[in-house]
Image 1 (spheres, helix red, strand yellow):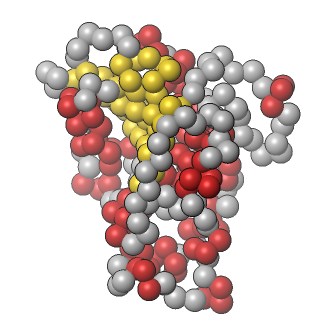
Image 2 (cartoon, rainbow, N blue to C red):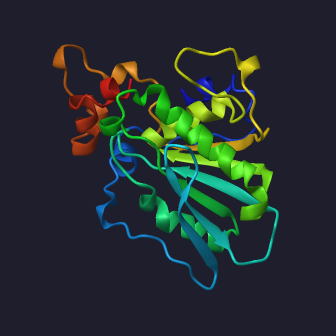
Length: 237
């Protein structure tokens, strides 16, 4: 299913990775960020925390290796949480590992959530889109090669990442579907690859008809069952 979504995206020229629907939903979709700690700089990398990337005040954390390079590849990470929870700190450990073990510049982003945004769709898609454009537009500041950018998301974040990978970061997706020819964007950045961890891309089956129960694939996983009982899809859309 992810490949069916991505194959028409002219902006994508990379690989898609998808995990299974059961345990992955528990791990990626309902991440409890309450134990996450704010990132701090080390001898191996520096962290710019709470960098504002759009006019509404949304923020990202930048993990930048202390290697002196100006052409690093960049990874933008989008947290899960059923579109109504989660935080950029949840991916702190993975961002640190990518920055230190692989020498990537990593950007963990926040986006608007359902509970505080009555028009979550399509706002959350545009938030991630804006974050990607912001990173590309600030390539010199962050020491990255804007032609070597990858996007990764888990669960709800994977859904948003898949959509942005299909849309392309030089397009603006706004209610009312404006004529793209009238939109001017400073950066022609392209995503080279998208990695999706438990991506919900076929949303209709996740809304049970007549209050139906969780599918057998959940295998007693309470987080998986929660997706089938809470109105997360309705709130998102």
